[in-house]
Amino acid sequence: MTAPVAREQLMAVVEGSPKAVGAHDRSTWVALFAEEGQINDPVGSRPHNGQAAIESFYDTFIAPNSITFHVERDIVCGRTVWRDLSLATEMSTGVVLDVPMHLRYDLVGEPDS
Picture 1 (tube, helix red, strand yellow):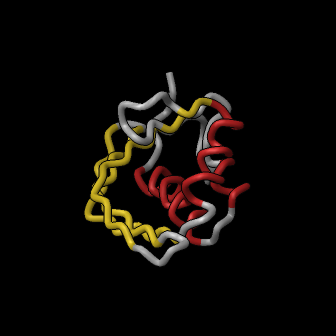
Picture 2 (cartoon, helix red, strand yellow; picture 1 turned 90 degrees about the horizontal axis):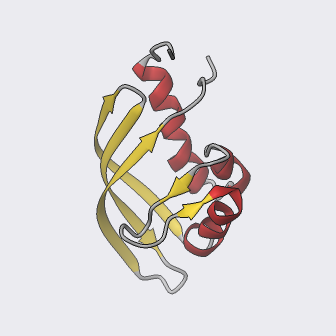
């Protein structure tokens, strides 16, 4: 049985995503995912499974844009964090898209202390 993890530890891992995205730090962002990690974006499409697919997702959707996370609230249940937010994505053309969304982070392994 896995020992409980403090909310602060879980949130520190989750906060790594917007920090890496904002810094355009591909290697740090990709390293946040477990080896068998997956991205379901857009919802309903085929998932992006594994490191190569996650790297491709980053290169296609994150790298060419400036993305700002506007978090409204976080809900923690066990090792899952649900994030209610909107993303402001400034595309290379200068167009800004504001997209409301919910992100689900299923955390595995042991977070660094």
